[in-house]
Length: 332
Image 1 (tube, rainbow, N blue to C red):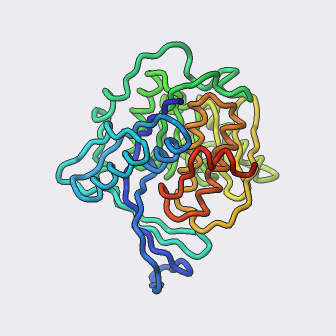
Image 2: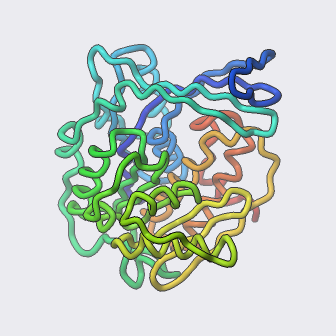
């Protein structure tokens, strides 16, 4: 069983299900309310744990009922909670979510204790003794043969302060972790090149990819004949900064993994979606778990896609994450 540490947000999702999403200034009535555990970091931790990884969560909650419930729910999902800090006098993070009958959503987040997490809260806890190469970049790390043997993976997102994420990415790389960074939401400011060169896998959607490029050295506009060519060119700009691999999720069109040697195209699976909240987190968590297990990159992509396909057929984020058995039997 591979090791995955997740450094990121821990929230409670307050979800209202309605027939259609409201427009600006509009009230839509007749909704059904439900509450779920959430936060991109916690979601990805649960996804990785249910996919079979040995997972530790690092983050912050407030000293309130939401925080206590989130620590308990992570523990119940086989995620180590020893790295979660309680911030006295702070409220835990919450997300207010509206979901329509097609599974599309609107989300607003109040970060609370997530934004009070400091690098020193975590840095001593992720230190490890390393041996050998754990970069995820060499001939085995970026090709069809995958990462040779089980590895330790550090998984990040963008729902804690950017400067904290950047410092801990650099540290995780120095400690020998394979670094996976889901750049969602898009960074609010320019990312230091040291951070990009410390990142083995960037996972983003098309909007986040464009935002990451725009925060760089003001590259000229990409002129491409088709959308995939544009994605390849934008990904190339990120790779030129030292990132090992770029994964771009394309919704119903599947996803692409791009590095300096190859492109892996992953097709989507057709399902009846009822709730897309947490689907991207499911993809990231299962990809990290599969990577830590030492699977080939093509298999990591496929397992992550199968898992995300299952998740959108269920309500909620963490509550929708499939088990290893469900992932491996889906679509077979």
